[in-house]
Length: 392
Image (cartoon, rainbow, N blue to C red; front, top):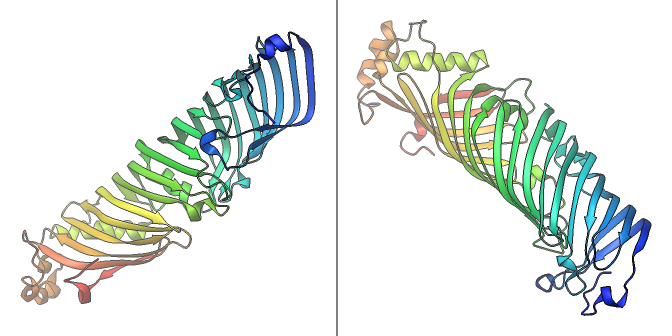
């Protein structure tokens, strides 16, 4: 156990130890006064070799240890010291590291085998770390599509308690880039795990990549560009990461096209009717300006101010979506540039003319209450006349 002392160890022990070998050692670091009451941190070291150790000069070292979560082996080569006897946490250290075969499956909700390489340096309680990670088969529990994930990061780590400030993490997968910063901290010492707080943004994302990351469908329901701004909170508990993840953010999608021909057909039909040309098959709609706000707790996503448009029509929605089973329940309003009777032809158009006034929008055209229910694989679209005056 490492404790501070006012004794000048270099004067008391003016020696140089040529080599120190330690197998299966346990290093125990006492907490700082601010962390009083929390148990000390323990580091199990399988193999440690130090050369030319003294109390007034740095010593070269090689260490091999196992990281518990995600579980994997860490190799370090660098310089340690000189030892700060009065403040052990301020002892300087610098090293290069490799982290191999880390099993993300030891973190509930994740899958994949991660490797990392980088360097760190500074006092023990303020280590500047930079490196990269590569996971060739990364996946969330909710997804059936492992993918290559590459990250580049810089961080500040307090080696005495493991608390980490992520100053920048750039993650790349498929054709999407996410940039995040935040912290990983031990707030509740009696609760297993650490609290993760992140801010993530992306101006260079693809909606199909995000869907493949999140859901198990054989193919994403839509394609298009994506912009994201998300606050992520993962409280420290020993349960599934997806179930305890909390999200609060905004998104915008552009150039959206549905891969499901049935859904895309409905969007095309919506545009034709909105323009008053229901039989014009030359009109092929591309959704634009799909945007909204969302919050997620307990794997349930609540959307608000969800809106999108096609030529001749726009939709405003609010509702819920369940990450685990894909169930959805949305209600809102459909606005068409055309009058209701212009959305049909022949005798149906004539029958609807008396109702044009009842469904007239504020700016002319037509306004109809709608709902979207069902699942992500089999969505159901319909009118919601019983809730016309009070959509969610």
